[in-house]
Length: 120
Image (cartoon, rainbow, N blue to C red; front, side, top):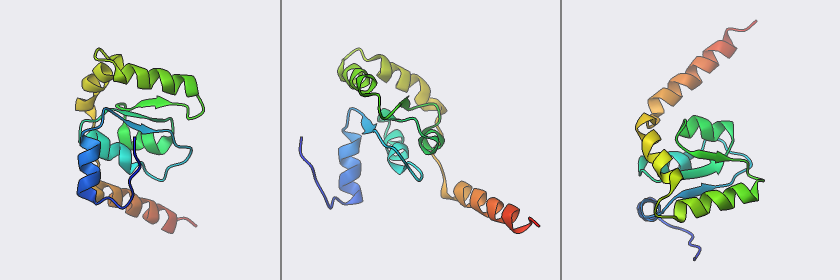
């Protein structure tokens, strides 16, 4: 395994498209763009159980406590297997995932601003 820096968006997308899964053991996230990018490419996602990642991925990712090392190991080993139960689960759930759109996000933000502005 190697580490790369300074990749273009196209190079990053190409690497992600060829991945067996996206692993995202994070403790804090603002939104979870890597989750949406992986799901958009039909790449299974193993990620921390954070509200931002649930918002980004819906019911499709496999959510794991970031401190539960044994659960991460089991999930990674499962996804590496040809008869992966997590891949079957992903394939069953990916059809329910809807790609987020900026217009939806902006609408939510402006609605929140309107609510705050109308408070006494």
